[in-house]
Every structure is written in structure tokens, then in C-alpha cells.
Image 1 (cartoon, rainbow, N blue to C red):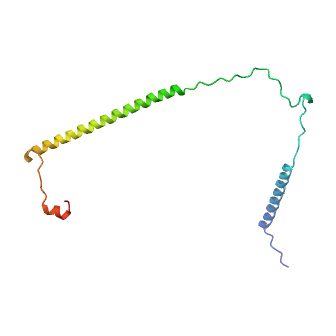
Image 2: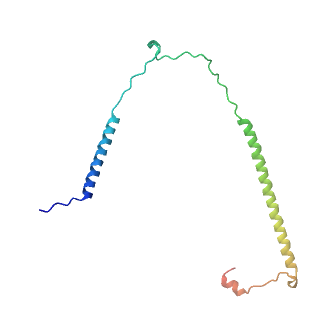
Image 3: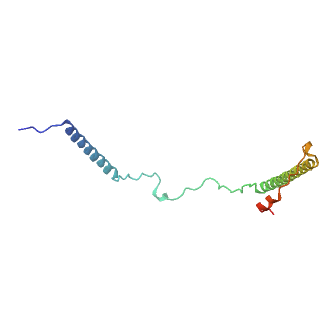
Length: 141
């Protein structure tokens, strides 16, 4: 009669499965032990029971509150000075910018006047007329 196969991998599988089952059971037992409540006894007090729950008398004086010094008034004055100086500085910058723009416009106007005055042979501007038909075609009336 033929003998059944006896594979080594099957025996290893059964052994590892058994070890896994044992480990699971061991961990569950440890967790059950940890869940059990273990009450500790109350500590013994040296004080007599008649004074238990009362506060001890204070031996030092109470702290007197002192109102803090806030720098709000001086800080407000400093901030006001800074804001005024910043506003003055912005106004001066705006005025300088306007003067610069006016000066630039004036120089450009003088340059254009000079170019219009010069003849074309000396680098002046030359007038080029557009034909009237182009005006009518584009509708730029």
C-alpha cells in the first residue's frame, strides 16, 4: 500500500501556526491581567483626624496689589509724532514728484518747440500731410 507524502513544509506550517496561536493566547492573558483593578490602600496620615480637611494658618502677610505702569500715553504721543512726520514726508515726496513731472513736461515742450522751429536740413521736424481720402476711408472725422 502506498505511503502518504510527508512534506517538511507542512510540518513547518503546523509548527508556526501552533506558535502563533500560543502567542495570541499569551497576549490575551496579559491583557486580561492588565484590565483587573488593583486598589492600593490609603496612606496613613500623621495628622490627627480632627484637623483633617482644614487649612493651615498663614504665617506671612498678604501681597498688596500694585497697579502696573502702562506706557500708553507716552506711546500715543510718540506714535502721533511719527505719523505726523510720515505724512509730512509723503507730502514732500509728492510735491517733489509733481515738480519733477512739470519740469520734464516743460523740457519736452521746449524741445518740441525747438524742433518745430528748426529747418528740416538742420534736424527739425517735417510736416507730412495725409491724403484726404485716407481720412474718409478710416472714418476719423
